[in-house]
Image 1: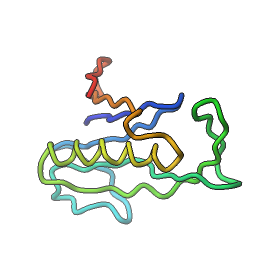
Image 2 (image 1 turned 135 degrees about the vertical axis):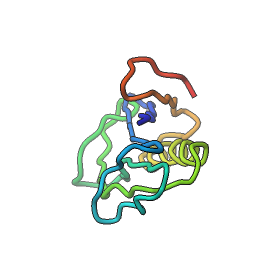
Image 3 (image 1 turned 60 degrees about the vertical axis):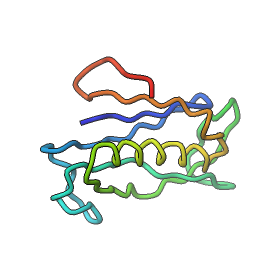
Image 4 (image 1 turned 90 degrees about the horizontal axis):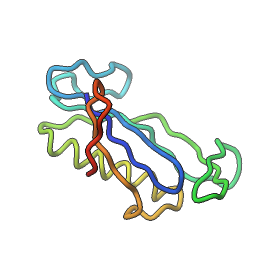
Length: 116
């Protein structure tokens, strides 16, 4: 299991990439259990009012969350690239430039992270 984390604007988003042989979560909308790699991460967007208040670049932003949409992939490269793009997109949806997002990938059972 890999944790793919994006940090920018003083906030962090982390999703989980289940690797070949690991048991991905099972719930409505989950991809076919035969997918060797499964990415699961929150999806959110900025709203005018309501939602959850999040500090981004020192300003309060109202954020609404969507139900996570798990996605299945055939290869690790496809899965990690889609995960990186997903994290950058979520930050863009709350007004953070995707190029400002610092991405890291770490094995869930270790403390060390690799900059990506």
